[in-house]
Image (tube, rainbow, N blue to C red; front, side, top):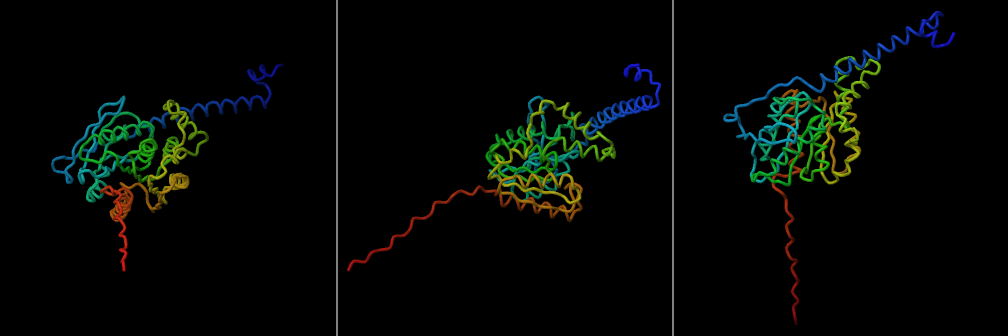
Amino acid sequence: MSIIDELRYPRRWYTKLLTVVLALLFFTVLATLAISAVLTYWIVKPQRTSSEINMASFPGRPDEVEFTVPGSPARKGWFFPGLRGAPTIVLCHGYESSRGELLTLVSALQDHQYNVFVFDFTAHGANKGTTTFGYKESDEVKAAIDTLASRNDVDPRRFGVWGYNMGAYAGLREAESDPRVRAMVLDSVYDYPKQMVKIGVEKTGVGGFPLMVTSAQTCFEWLNYAYKGDPSLSSKLKGLSGVPILFISAADDPELSAITRNMFLKAQEPREQAIIAHGNFVNLPDDEKRTYENRVVTFFLTRLPVAEISAVPAAPAKTAGVVKK
């Protein structure tokens, strides 16, 4: 009797056991793939919360600025004016957040005469779609900077970027090819978008199941196949030599903290690192939030002054007189 016949019509106890094991393995893999596909869909399509304010009564006199992202509907962001001709700080919210949750940080920066711009990424706020955890979001950062640079009340050559997780990735990805970005604060930044997928799966409680994380990451990479060859952000950090970067990591988020720490070590000077007790700025208690805002504002004031410092020519040296006798 051939082995194939024995597997098709098992008669011996060990072939029957092997058949059962193979059947269980097959259905386990199938179930894992199905569950990971559903999880991936939930992760890339987060629940949206709209953030609307009364522009006429809101402090800071914000303007609504429309900008266009190639291949997407027109977007709107809030521009908070500072000193005319000052640099602009673009705030990039994190995953499952929105522009409306950053208004206290906006005020802290605007109080020091910076222009500040906030907007909602795809799949966040009022915007439909699915997130790519930074791939396409970096195009949104670029479109926003392009639009702002065309204004006559900002410095078109000097921008700062603050970002949290997804926003930090998107901002850094844009900055690596945009010389207009002169200073950055990267809070809980990661190196590859699939690292955020892993964190998302683990938060559901099923990350410990065999192949669950790997399957979800594979699904995500299939959805974003166009970016398959993209290198890690840390591999291109050398191109930002001379751009000051403050890396912030949180002790209560060990996974992202370890990634951020590794990217800090690979970054070029000038670089700074801050380790805080609790992550996610928008959920911090008031006292910790004020400390965080002061740290961010101090960094920008030092590294991206409101008034551009020009080289002042040195006064000509005085020539000592010669007394003739």
